[in-house]
Amino acid sequence: MYRETKIYNDGSHYIAIPPTTNKAKRSKRIKEELITVVEEEFETATNPTSAVNTTTESNNTPAESFDAESEIRCDTEAEPIDEVGDNEPKQEKRKKVRQTTRSEIFNTLYIESIEMPKSKRRKFLIDGMRKYFQSDKQTVGYVNDKLEKKQRSIICRRIRFTRKAYMHDFNYFVTLTYNNELHTEASFKKKLKTCLNNFHNRKDWKYMGIWERSPKGRLHFHALFYIPNGTMPGELFTKRDYNLSTFKMQNTVQNTFFNSRFGRSDFEEVDKNLLRIGNSVAYILKYIEKTGEKFVYSRGLPMYLISDVEEDDVAT
DNA sequence: TTGATCGAGTCGCTGACACT
DNA sequence: AGTGTCAGCGACTCGATCAA
Image 1 (cartoon, chains in turn cyan, brown, yellow):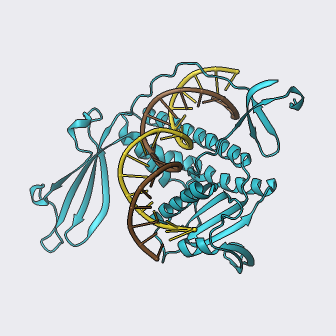
Image 2 (cartoon, protein in one colour):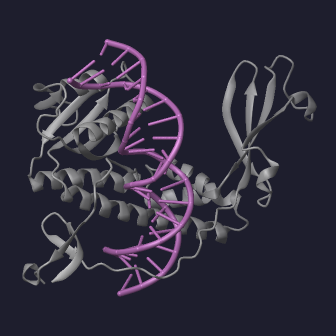
C-alpha cells in the first residue's frame, strides 16, 4: 500500500507521485533594486506628441528621494536657444521621472516583441535593456537569464493547466467574443470575470481558460467549462453562419445569455470525450507557448487528488 | 530537463445590498 | 428569483528556487 500519494491524470493514465518534502532552506528573495527613469516627452501647444526618450539616472538613488511618478515641467524659454522659428508652434519639453525596476522594463519589452522570431527578439531585448546596465556583458547575462526563467514559467503553467484540465469533468469548450457596441476590452474582461466568478460561487461552475487575441487583434476568451445540469443561463441555440477563418458555412451552438451580455458565444460540447478535451487543451497551450499569456482559473481546481494506492493497482 | 515546494502578493470569495 | 456590484480579507497562484 502506498500511503497518501498525489495522483494526477496526464490525459491517458493516472500517475501517482509519492509525497516528498523539500527541506532545503531557501535563500530569502531579494527585493529588486529600484531604478529611476527619466522620460522626455516633446509636445507642442497644438499637437502633443508621444515621442519619448528615456534615460536612467543614478542606479543607486534612494527610493525615497523621488515620488513614484512625479513630473517636472520645463518651459522651453529656459532652455538653450533652439532653432525653432517664431512661426513654428511652441515646443515644450516635459520630463517625467518615475521609479521602476529592470524586470518591469524587461516585461514591457518582452510583450512588445511577441511577434518577433527568437533571435531577433533576444537582440531587441538586449538593445532595449542596454542603457540600464554598465556593460554589454551584464546586459546579455541579464537578458539570457530572464528569457530562461520566462521559458521555465511557461513550462510550469503548462503542467498546472494540463493536470487541472484532465482532473475535472469539463463539459464545454467555450469561446466568448465581445461586441464593440456592448463593451470595451477592459469592461469585457472585468464583466466576464465577475460573471463567471458569480456562477462559480452560486452554481458550482468550474472553468479554466485564456485570453486570446485573433490575428485581427480582437480579444476572445477560450475556456473549458464545467456547467452542472440545469444551471445553464439563457438558452442554447444552433446557428448557421460563415466562418471567417475557414471561409465555410458552419453550425455553431450559441447561448442567448452570453450573446446579449458580451456579444458572441460558441459552446462546443466535450462531455467526457478525452480526445476533444485533449484538442481543446492543446489549442490553448499552443497559444500560451507563443504569448506567455496567463491562465484564468476558477478557484478550487486541484492539480492532484490525494489517495492511498493499492500495490495491485500500480503498473510499472 | 523536469518536478516539487515555498513565499509574496494578487485577486477570488463572501456577504450584504441594489436593481430589474 | 436572478443578476450586478462592492469592500475587506485571506486562500491560492505564480514565479523563484531547490533537487533529482
